[in-house]
Amino acid sequence: MKSIILAMVLMAANSDAKDEMAKVAVCLNYESVEFNEAQRARLVASQIYAQIGVKLEWLFCGSKRDGDVVIWFRHKAPNDLAPEVLAWALPYEGKTIEVFHDRVRQSTHSYLGDLMGHVLAHEIAHVLQGIARHSQSGVLKPSWSAKERLAMSFRPLQFTQHDAELIRQGVGARAGKRASTLAASNSRP
Image (cartoon, rainbow, N blue to C red; front, side):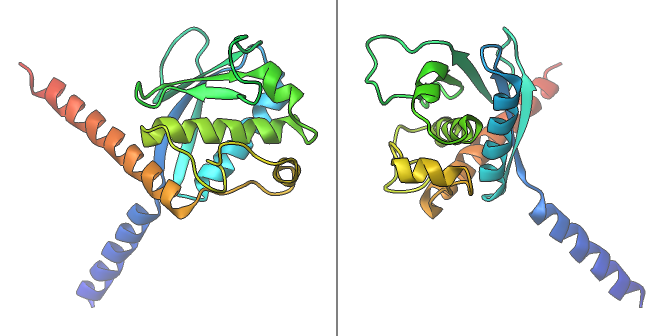
């Protein structure tokens, strides 16, 4: 009887470990964005990532660069960028994203926070995947149609299965680097 109870406890503990989401700390500097827009954007991006088992933990960064991903909102996009560019990420640098608030605001007929949340999810994916690539559909599509942008107000887009796998691999690699760095620093005399 004791062995059956012990087996049930071990199975429950193992199940809880599987269900735990991978976590990514996102440092968000949204001083140039209205609070409600930023809140809605965070919620939408978090919902998109929860669908693939990744939890975004939001931090306000101010002038710091803490977090796995650092997002800066810029009032105005650089003049030399193509007009359809709403944001950019530095996937090979592995941390930095800039969102051009003027471009996001100009490009939406739907609720601004919903579009902004999708832009955040899209750019965070580039950083987590660690490569510059797009998909034929979903969150990582290079640009969204007017119909897709309107639909975002009702239901968030999703990542393709391939995108989700690459994101989870990237998150796992980051966790592994963090653990080895921590172990190395703890082993020093």
